[in-house]
Image 1 (cartoon, rainbow, N blue to C red):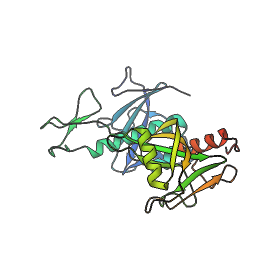
Image 2: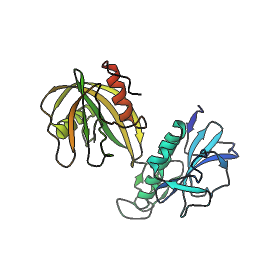
Image 3: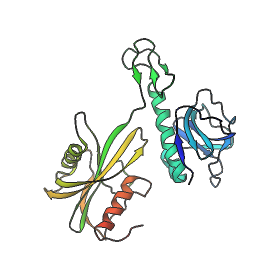
Image 4: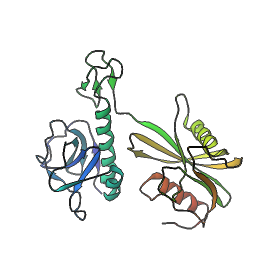
Length: 270
């Protein structure tokens, strides 16, 4: 696996071929032939004057940019579907690219005075030429928690989930809140139970649109399941060997559930 070296400015010397993460109406361009791999293209394949430099993967520069129409030889795919079609090293760069494109789109005007912003030299930021307000790429921390007790895990589904799929609980961190406080609050709000013994599992960049998912497991210590109206369609305790459909390993929730079940002596879900 090639090493990715993130950077805000073009590394020298520039590569003759580069990975182009090109978006059209929020969708990522992939080869028109669905069987064709996502490969580096000649560095002049797209106009890079308004592009964002991402860094270098192995010997290839990586760029993110937008186009007004899908060019010949390409198809546009939703970012989530496109990421699932890419190998892991490209998937995470695509996530970075998507977040930067969304940040650039959403901060073209100053949130303080409304003046059109410009890119700030030397930084990944947009600056207001009128009042000097700086807008950096936004990162929204969100917790994910898999609640467990002897022989069972608590899984829930949102009305927006794929039909039949259950996952761990999740929610955004509020101002002034620690991650631990967020976990305890969100679990209580969403399903009405109390937890202890929080264990940090890991994190994942999640560009929908600009989240950082921080995953935990926690032991149930009291309370009956009461789903939060409008947020949780259904929640229940599931035996380790009788889980409902869960997210794939594409997302950190898929890894968290599988690894926790295995650590508790359950089956290897794969």
